[in-house]
Each structure stands twice: as structure tokens, then as C-alpha cells.
Length: 323
Ligand code: PBG
Image (cartoon, rainbow, N blue to C red):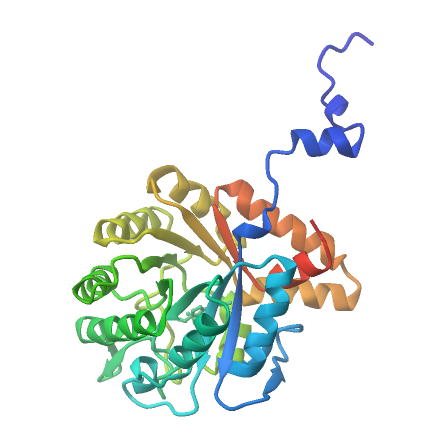
């Protein structure tokens, strides 16, 4: 047959496939999330997230050391406090769980890039990401608490703070307080386009942060909207975000792609708990090959335009040499 174009030529063997691959998963671009709790010698498996544990600081350090050897350089820290209250006091306490964890990490392994999640939902007894009045989540009074939280993380040694609350104006408020306190080099990774998603289910089990009434629709984004993601991203960059995030990732690959076109700053995507647990469940049931599913999903997130990916698969990917 007279065929000039035979795309199969570049697929004939793995060497040429690797040579021409457009996306390569680079371990340095993966961020591993961790759930840290009070106490010592604690390691509690999270039922809905097989392979991920809630750990006390001592065990966290062991995990970080092992992961570092496998190639993980960046981590995202979530705190699970012992006490919750109306205003999430433990989120901005100097002796809070995240603050203690960050101090310990930086003492033992200063080379690890520590990103902290800045939000109130794990710390409030109502489970919302802000202060409540008459059933409403108040925007402006919440900003002060988020800024205090970010500052306390920076004081503990965080390299980067990641506000995930979706209040309006929080990036600017955080940038101001960090600069006033000379933390010019602490960067902000904003959860800029964060959708109100069913894919956060396992995380809320893990962190005990499910809202006790209502839902998060009055602050997280409507999954039907794409233009709004651009607006959120532009607003956050104007307020000083260094990196903008799209979350979740898999159902929002189009959003990642759009955001990448307009952002002009690095884009991060969060491959969230539900996306991770679906793969684990499929693998357990024998409906799919975990290794290939995970690698294909992470590849698609990079291909869509993300510069880095937060994923619970990071450890498995690197330890088991899936890429
Ligand atoms: C806190 C926060 C959530 C996640 C990250 N930060 C939960 C939520 O918004 O309900 C979800 C992460 C995941 O599902 O892996 N606001």
C-alpha cells in the first residue's frame, strides 16, 4: 500500500516511544499529602483510602524519610486536631498540630519542601471552612483567621501555604500578613479553582471534616462552570498567588487546560482522595490494573497542562517504580 504517513513507526518499540513521548512524569513534580494527628506512635489506616494513614509526628518523620529516599521532595500537610470549636482555634494556635509537625520536619529534614493546607474545616466543630452566623459562612471575618493560620505556619517554617477555603480575598489577606512579618519568601499556592465535589468524600472521613449541616456550595465552585475558574484564577494571581491550583483534577482536565493558557504562573492540580480511592477499589475488585490506572491518570493531568500534581499515589508510583 502506498502510505506515506504511518504513525505506527514511532510506536514500534519502547525506545522510540520513550524518545517521542510528550509527557514524562517527573518525581520532582509530585507532591505527597499527609494527615498528621496528635500523640505519639500513632498510625491509623484510613479505611476509605487504602495505603494512607493518619500518623503522629514521629511516624510522619519516618514516612517522610523513606519517601525522600524514593524521590519525594515536596509534601502537603493536613492537621487533625484533638479539639475542635466554633472558630477553629487549633488552626492558628502556635502549638497546633500542623505547626508542631512543620517545626519537627524542618528540624530533621530542612531540604523537604513543606506546603501546608490553610483552612478551618478540620478545626471547626461545624465542619465549615469559615465562621458561621445564622447558618451562613461569613467571608470577611473568616479572612482574619485564615491569615493568622497562614502566618503561624510560616513562623513554624512552612515554605509554602495553600489556602483551600474558597473565601473571597483570602490570598491578598495572607500575602499582606506574611509580608508585614517579613515572610517575603513564603509562597502562596492557592486552591484557586476548587469545585464543590463528591470526590472529596474519603478525605472528609480521613480528616473528620464533613460539614455538620448543609454543604459547601456557597463557597466552593459549581462543577458546571468553567469561565468562573478563569475569574478565580485571575483574582488570586492579582492578589499575589504564586501558584494556582485546580481541584479535583480528573473531572476537570478541561479546566486545567484553560487555566494553563491564561495563568502565566505555574499550575498545580490536585488528584483528590476520591480519585485515588476509586483506583484502589477497582484494583481490589480486579476491575483494573492499579499501576496502569494510576500512571495513566497522572499522565493525563500533566498532559492537560498541570506543572505539578498533588497525589496520594506518589509514594506507590515512586517506590514501586511505576514510571
Ligand atoms: C479542606 C480541604 C479539602 C481537601 C483539601 N483541603 C476538603 C474539602 O474541601 O472538603 C480535599 C482533598 C481530597 O479530597 O483529597 N478544605
